[in-house]
Image (cartoon, rainbow, N blue to C red; front, side, top):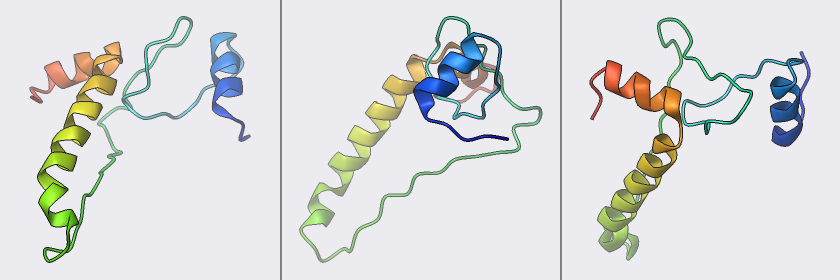
Length: 91
């Protein structure tokens, strides 16, 4: 097992010399097949936290909405993840 930067790994995968573990939101790229692991044994969670008596508490709802929009935009660029979401009835 080796570690390398993302662009090198993408190139190695495109030419058939490597397999990489990536997030479901990895964008669709020519020469790369992104497939879910059987049984979806891995999950990734993002948490947003703040103290209720700080200025940040007023912005929490806005930050959460922007984070959800950003994730939806990234997810939409991944054909395999879009298909997986639809197959699992995830809104």
